[in-house]
Each structure stands twice: as structure tokens, then as C-alpha cells.
Image 1 (tube, one colour):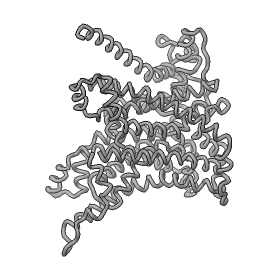
Image 2 (cartoon, rainbow over the protein chains, first blue to last red; image 1 turned 180 degrees about the vertical axis):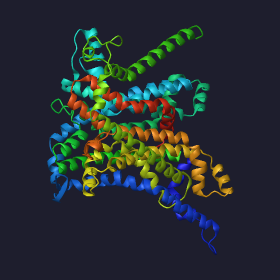
Image 3 (cartoon, chains in turn green, cyan; image 1 turned 180 degrees about the horizontal axis):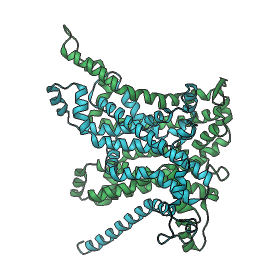
Image 4 (cartoon, helix red, strand yellow; image 1 turned 90 degrees about the horizontal axis):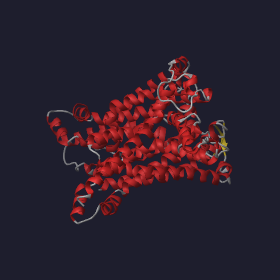
Length: 317
Length: 282
């Protein structure tokens, strides 16, 4: 863990001893090391700059421009923001997105935590088999997962409808109602991400010091007290990181509503991410899309900074 | 206490069995049900209640799917994912090595950039709009390298992170003894460290392959030529053109998920270990 610390001061001149007299072989070695280090990280740095960092910055720039069919034709000031972001419908959009994000995150954490606690107690071999089963929906693509989930649980010929039919005597198609469609999205999304959250929490649990639990046992703490006074506080950073990752991924997810409902019925499942996508690529209104994307980016940047800082805190341990 | 213990054990055992069955059913059933449907005849698909065995079977749906443009998407994505995985493992490994073992100017910046790019790449679909516009300005849309470049960058942060976990686990004494034997830093990287990081590289490779294979949003807009469209877009186009023909639809879904399932059953152990070792730290 302590090795993480080094990068922070690694680049400073303090690492190199002051030069006295002629160039020593140590100096040559350090110069080589510096050159090699830069050479080795260059491809990754260029790629991330090109595909992730520049677009993040450009989202703000583009939102101030007058754009027609993805071509810049002039400066627009805050026009795009006034048309796309500072409007009434943004509140509806935000509300729907909040329902989707809060629904998926709460459901995922609520299910992932007990499953991870349980997997933590299994023997190695059994735990491995269960971990692979648990992660399975996560390795499916959204398109395939949505297709199979829908066919199994939501269609009238599926197993879900059959169970509903035998239990209640009637079956319905959840995708046709506004609440049903949103609930279906939340379920499909949670089904896909749950395994990932389980593994992250499990990794956090494995990292806890077993001696602490032993000491607490000796002091007469029961299972509930051990959970309350050791597991919860020790897992706080892990859980915050997991929540940030889950919020980022569901807030930005355009795929699930796009594939499952297309935003319907009647716009009931159009979240911000989907709205940005359709504004740009269906309505071809790139200026408005850029403004919406820039607005959404503000939240993302805040979350990314929080994530980086928390990871940094873990580094300091 | 002693008298209740066996009873408690039985309850906890049956609870455990229920948990195993529940998780297995929820996670596996859609795939099994899709697989069964893909082999049913048109009439058998419409039968209610659902049949799990004894239905008239056919492989014709697979013929329908593979006869169309679908197989081209399959091949395109196979090439994309393989190339991106090979490059990704290489770039991720050298980056991880440099970040863990070497001192050089700007190291802190690169380190925190990669950490920050982990969540940024998870939420990348929101970047499709600015990415599209600036790739368009650079005339980089609809090229053979457009999607591989994007997929490489999207999967690199997590892959580097996972490999870095493996690099850290290689004792630094081995580097020292290698250097005494006359190896340079490059020699240490390729002869000592990387051969010992194979589990991390497998895990990273799997993550990259899965990520590149499953990506959908960028695939729908950054390329237009049919030959450059990835598999997920083919599956989606299938949904819109076939609507309710669940035989071909499930056959397409099963074909699109087969490479990933094969990988999971061969290398799942490494994936799980790599995810747990790598992700939570970052």
C-alpha cells in the first residue's frame, strides 16, 4: 500500500541527489530511468487525453458554440444553455433520472451488501463458484442482458408472466405502464450491476483485519456489535467508493433506457443520459446536446474528484 | 447454547441453500431460457405454460441469423476485441510497471489521471456527443481505427489498475538481483516482472475483451459503414427489424454472448481475483 505514496513526490528533484563533480554513473542511471518512465506512460497518457480528457473539457466549450449538424458555425454564448438546460422540462428530466439512479443504487447496495457478507464466510472453492455465478450478468452486454431479461421476465410468453398467472390468475405487461417501465429499467440495471458491486464490497471485507474481530470477541462483543462497531466504520471508504462508481455508471447510462424502452412510454423513462444522446443523434441538435452534456459533466467531475480523493485517502493508510 | 447449536446450524444451512438456488436461478435463468428458446420451433415458442424440455427442436434460427449480415458484426467485433485486448494488455503493463517501479517527472499527474479515468470511463456514454464532434473535426469518424481507439482508451484505466496490483505483488528484491545480473530496467520489466504478472494480465485482458465486445453507444454513432459496425449494434438492429420473432432474436443473443461465456468459464477465476485486487483500491 505504501508504494502508492511514491508517485506523489516521485517527480520532484529531491529524488535526485545534488550533483557534485563530474557526472556519476548514478546520475546516468537516473536519467535513463526518467526517460524510460516517460516513454512507457506516453501511450496511455496520449490515449486517455484524446478519448476521455479532451472531450470532457470540450463539452463545456461546445456548449457555448452555435452548432449545426455537428459543424461549428459560430459563437452562441449561453443560447444553448437557455434552450436546453435552463428550462422547465429539465426538472422533470432530473426527477426521472434521480428515480432511476436512487432506485438502482439503493437496490444494488441493499442486495450486494448481504451477499458479499455471505460470500465472505464461504470456503474458497465454494466462494469462487458463487463469485463466478454472481458476476455473470455483469459480463453480458446491456443489449443482450436487456433482451434476455425482457424475454424471461417481462413478456407475456415468458416465465415471469407465467408465475404471475399461476399466482394471481392474471398477467400484465409492465413495459406498457409508466411506473412499470421505470421499475423494469431499475430491475434490469440492478441485475447487471449487482455482481460487480458484490465483488467490490467483498474485496473491502477481505481487506479487514481479522485480528480486530478476534480482539472484539475476546472483549465479549457479539456478532451484531462486531458488525456495528468494526465492519461498518472500517468499510466506510470502500462503500463510499462503491456508491460513487454506481452513481456515475447509472447516471450516465443511456444504453438501458435506449435499448429496453427507447425512453417511453410517453417519455416516462427518458433520463438525462438518454436525452443527451437523442438530442444529438436523433434530433441532430448538437448545441443543445452539448449544453446538456456539459451540465451533466459538472456532476460527473464532482464525483470523479471525490472518487480520486477517496482513493488517495486509501493510499495514505 | 449447546442445545440450540445443531438447530441453528440446520437453519443456517437451509438458508444458505435457498440463497444459492435463488442467486443461481436469477442469474442463470435468462441465459438458459434464451438458449432453450433459440432451439424451439416457432409453434413451440408460443406454447404456454413455458416448456423446459420435450419441445420440438430446430437449429434453423441459427441458420437465419448467421445467413444475414449478423456474422459480419460478429467477425468485426472479434477483430476489434482481440486487437484492443492485445494492445491494452501491453500498454496497461508498461504503464503499470512505470508507475510502480520507476521515478520520472510527471508521474503523479499520470497516476491521478488514471485513477480519475476509472469512473470517467464508466460514465463515458455521456462523452459520445463531444467525442463525436471532435472526431468529426479531425476526420476520424467511420474509420477502421475509430472504435478500437475508443475501446482501448475506455478500458485502459481499469486494466492498468488491475495489472498494477500484480506488479506491486512482485518483490522488489527480484528487480535488484536482476540488475546485479546485468539487466536494465527494460530487461527487468520484460524478463522478471511481466512473466510473474500473468494472472493480473489475464484478468485485465478479460476486462478489456468484455468491455470492447459489449460496448454499444459509441458503436451506434461513430461508425456508419456496415463493415465497421460492432456486434452489439447488429443485435440491436435485429431487435428493431425482427420485433417479436423471439427464435432468431434469442439465437442472436446467444451467439453474441457465447465468446464472453467461454472466456468466463476458462478465465473466470482470474477475472474475479483481478477485479477484487484491483478495483477497490482505485
